[in-house]
Structure formats: C-alpha cells, structure tokens
Image (cartoon, rainbow, N blue to C red; front, side, top):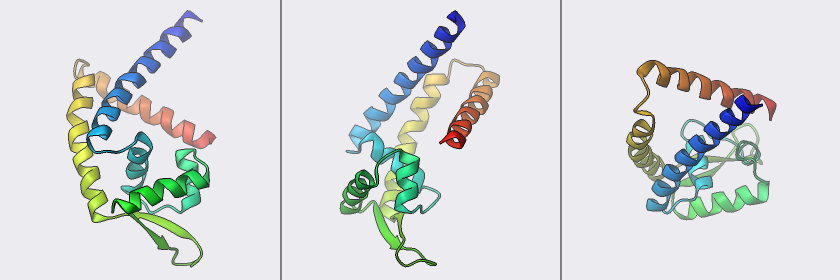
Length: 141
C-alpha cells in the first residue's frame, strides 16, 4: 500500500508540473488546455466531431463550442466527409499548424528541462512507460 502511495504521489506531482508548464504556455497563446489538446489531436488526423468528442472526453455540444471558437480564430475548419456528406470533420488550418508548431517549440525545452536531470536511459524508459500507460488507457475507453 505504501508503494502505491509513492507511485500515486509521484505521478500526480509529475502531472502537476507538466500541467503548470502547459498552462503557462497556453496562456501566452490565449488557449485553454482543452484547445491545446484539440490542436494536438488535429496535428496528424482529421477526426469527425464524434471522434473528437470521444478522444477529448467531452459531450458533442461542448466540442461544437470548442470548434466554433477555434474556427473563429482561424485555427481549424470544418469539412464534409468524402464518403458521407453528412459527416463533419475538423481539420487544422495553416494558421493552426503554425500556432501548434510555435507551441511545441516553446514546450519542448521546458519539458526537456523538467526531465533533464534524469540519465538518458531513464528518459528513454519514461517515454516507453508513459506511452504504454496512455495506450492502455485509450484501449479501455
């Protein structure tokens, strides 16, 4: 049980540290954390609104508002499905891609600094372990 508490504390404290970095950078770009998450999802795919809602763990109506606000800023556009014209997909615009690139450019050194005290082997293990935890969580959803 004590080992579990140590694990819980470590993961929560790491989460707080990452969240603090994300919040700081997001504020500089006038983005919410949810908008940052959406742009991260849209970097390599054009999901439908329902898929976007599922990945973000939001109700469809919340995603509609999220996309509306991003669209008003020129970050995303809605497109119609190729096979099903009723389906609405979301795609990042060039402006959105550039903003996402700038965000990652600011984020990368701060995350690198956060874990910079770890030996390279431990950083590689962190990448593998975090990736596995996230992948397993996605499978359970």
